[in-house]
Length: 225
Image (cartoon, rainbow, N blue to C red; front, side, top):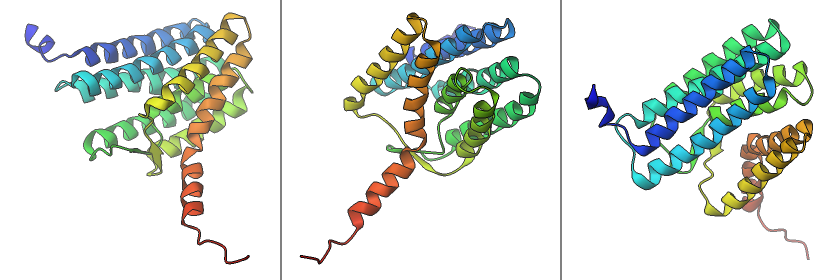
């Protein structure tokens, strides 16, 4: 039994914490406690970011990729889908099942595909799950249903999504997190969810913005003047 523990690295422990937070989110949603359920999904998002950082800095173990993907299925696949179903009813059972299936396919493809330093193929499931969780507190069932369908497609697509590893992005990310947390602590749930949601929408449309910038950079100079 002790053999398997020798294979576990610090990053793997954080990945398991990610899974535990996702499981906690499902329990909260089952009890009708939707706000704590969504908060746990966002805490899992933070844990997912931390385990990736630790894996790059301290090294990844032989089980790292598999543990990370299994944790992501729970926290950003099953938990958001279950939260949507618990909050809005049985119509979301089918949408949630499709979303979960696409998330599993997205993670399986990632595990067996060559890794790019700068891009993901399809939107990562943590971003998709966090968007679904935030949407539940904004515009009700229509927005959540739309996002379940849209992110399902984007996860299994080959649209390139950037990896944000630039240290200059740490402060903006912390600022968004602090703003959302402050609004939540002050009792402004919709504002908190809105701040997080808008930041995630920015990532959702980032491939389009990047492509437009590339085309603009390739545009031949004007001959006027």
